[in-house]
Image (cartoon, rainbow, N blue to C red; front, side, top):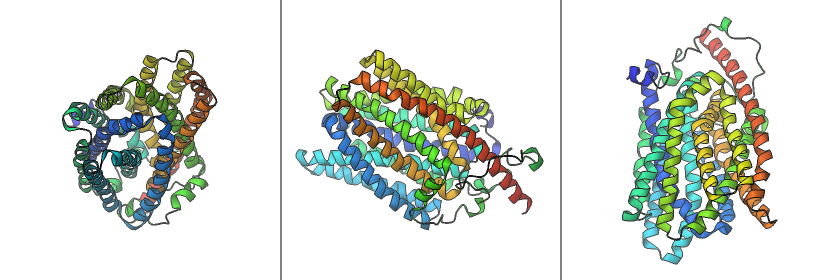
Length: 458
């Protein structure tokens, strides 16, 4: 197994079990989401673009409540308890939606569909955020640069299998019955957490970087960010503690976390612009709802296949050799090129190519690199602050993008004008990516020094 994986990823023998479970974990999380994603997109297209800003508002409010509940649970339970509880809570929700869709009238199901849209928009961020929070907790910065790209491949395969399931079965079973497929796939996630090696995160020699003699590590590094600390692995299975507002207060106090917030906001605002354009065009192109759902699934299939190739062949090498900052900046650079192209030639074909290329770059390059940013945080922030950023801040960007898009349309701007509005946002995004990459490297050095000092005194 080591010889086979060695041709693809730089993995060490003591990391094989952890890497395999992380791979499967990501597969079931992304696979389950991509089964229901086309169903959600069909609900958006059938309801019309006019209803989207209101559903985005509902999503934001729900996300705020969900974050408060999540912080309260995290404060009182170990990660091996609260992660399985969270996934099984979402499974129970899916069963409830399945029952409602089969028992209520068509008129009532309109509102069930809207509630399902909001729920999926909350669900997809929380299940993915929980997965990556766990990954950033058990892998350090050096391991993350080597292994996160391959772990992301598991998610990409799941994101390929999910649309295949939907596109193949939606005409035979109907969209509502596919909800149970998602619930069944999610059950594997708690078991991946259960069987994850308990001593992996606390092993003193788990990476070459941590075993480097202190004399070899530069002594002059940037001051430690208040949201980063090392040497807390001994408390890995203890409740994290802290109040429900700890995530918010730590984000406000940390320039590094605020920088990540800015990255997420710029990403989501520009993504919402392109998503609204997609929704508007496909709503006019397709009249049959199952056909529209199948087309969304096929688009996801092309996207995720391209993402898989990028992750296998490029991402890991890019992060190891050029660093996190360069890997992060690929997404805003591509977005800038795409929006400029749409500004001059706003065609459906170009929009489709831009959507696939942009999303593939996000999942292939940007997402693994963004997760590396969180490896230098202390444990509480890997769950609380990260959850706040990846869910509430993410959906806040959606909200800003949704109402901004509606406002720009009200001012008379069409696809061309909106595309040009997005260009300066992508330029600012590029600058922020380089700053975050530089800051992550500095904080990783500080963290490594502190871990070596802790090991030397024990």
